[in-house]
Figure 1 (spheres, rainbow, N blue to C red):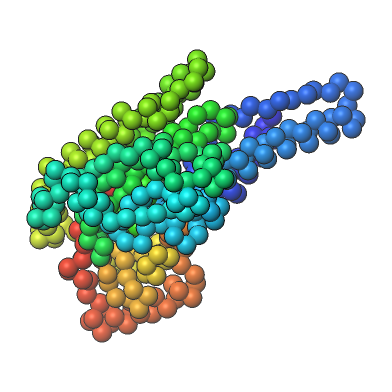
Figure 2 (cartoon, rainbow, N blue to C red):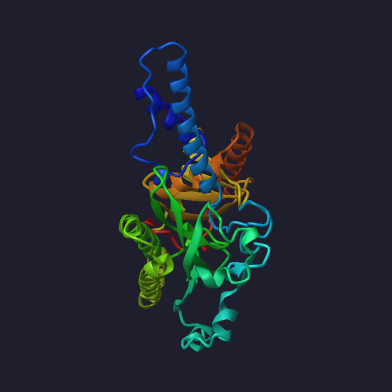
Length: 378
């Protein structure tokens, strides 16, 4: 049993399965032969194949959930062109008849549906608008032969929300926070929150938003057990089941409106007081170990991990871009999703040479007009 458990853990690790998808146990159908010989080898092979099959199933589920992107049933992948919004304000509008994702500008959609607060948003107020859309609406045009009955996962509904302030040049952005229904390795119902957007949620200026999303996922874990129990008692309308959950998430996101202005001003005050990690940018870069120098694949920049949660971003030529505060799990998530990787020896070597030259010449001074700190993003 220990050998089978170790094999399952190894396979799950190799496949890069999200830790949230890791089961506490696997259910197998075992036949215990009493005569030994070839029967024992056949029984062992059957057990191994069952574990491999379950791991392949969860791997396919995880591959369909590329961060920020929507699965294209036409291409059979979430990594194809057109699976992710091209602009920060775009949200997921639904599938075409052939299963291709379609996106639209969030503000334009709010104008067309005559959102009661759109005038305030257009006037420049720092508010968050939301809209709940059920999965059947998103699949209205989608034909069954192009994923309408996909066994991988099912979009039960989503909350479109925006506009949010970001820490980078995108300025403001919107998201489609999707509630997906899948299955665990044990075959039980699983509810999962999936953020679709052109911007990484970790780049949001308000750390309270990530805390809302984390709490909501924990709530979904408990609700999935309740859904499983209702389904065992008879047929359940899954979209009706999750509607109150989506409405509650929308209310929580709208609740950030009253805090957005105060948090932004507080960040500016902290910047003026010198509490940002900017002043440590070049000292941290000069002292960084090999493991503390990373490469951002999305931005083609160098990321330096300093002490006490400091994170500094540089160009490959050593020019300082920005500095933020970031918790350890936020860093681990970017490494796990592949956005960041360890810098190659040549990349580290060239970067260190540029840092030494800039510091020696007196040009190594941090940028003072970078984005606001990320606080304690959860």
